[in-house]
Image 1 (cartoon, rainbow, N blue to C red):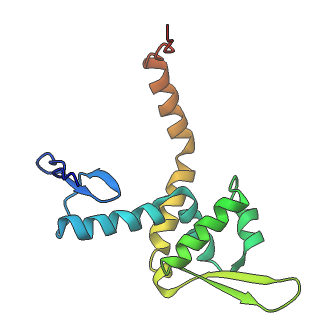
Image 2 (image 1 turned 90 degrees about the vertical axis):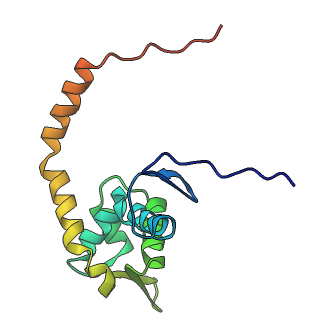
Length: 151
């Protein structure tokens, strides 16, 4: 068996299993930092925020969520809902009827995220034109790298 030492982090940076590095300073460094990052990745992705914001109004069925979230695939919605359910943010209720009926709702813990989720989704939607303008200005002043060719 070959043993290698763990990579050394630059001062102010620490390493976390599953992530190359984290530059945030958490009180319990590696344990709380890694766990916090894991949860932030779940709730901070583009689909989870929209699901949380939509479920804040009422319980919704899968098809209603899919209809409301522009651009999400059925598979991505399924993966997102499963992750949120696993983390205790969303509940899934299956009714024994034909055709099958499945409802999704925020848990009490999920409801505590609602204000932050709505704020972020609203901010993104209200700043689309400004972001588009900033991107266009950046792209206009930044040269496009030449394609790499191999000989």
